[in-house]
Image (cartoon, rainbow, N blue to C red; front, side, top):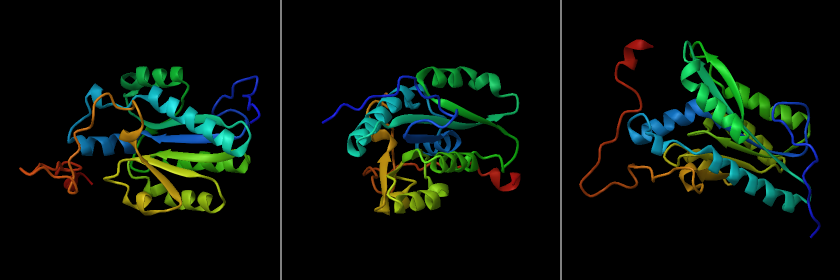
Length: 222
């Protein structure tokens, strides 16, 4: 097998057209909500995902894809997040840590209910598609349903698509034979400790509390 070499100059995510790419997009707001619903509370540090482990996993997948396609495939990873008003300082160290690992970050002000980052994630997938460098897509989102249409379209053209999320919330992706679903907890090293997951398919004999997805007061706040 011939050696597949990386370009002499590393590609910078979000910059000009680069080499063939395996694209990972992390939906931070949705994954935070999904993780919170599983835990029933704000995640402790031990239950926060490790992005260095996620990055190594993506590198391994891009290497496998390079061998399969017989061309160098660049792993590109971007975290999409919202920034609440006066909340920049609270996430600055997290954003800097992501960038030090090698992730790009797309940050958008959280001004109202229409400021979700889903449309920006889809636009970035379209950008790489139109540049004709897209060789695979990984969408990391707790349920990922908002990306079903574009992922199905890409899968129909032969581009491998993957949804990374939580099996409790992503039954549509699990059931779709064209989509490779991976539970986030099954990626080696992403969580320091096993998540205390309780669901209707895996109840202990003594029963379990299933926490609400949102506070009851939300009924009068919307």
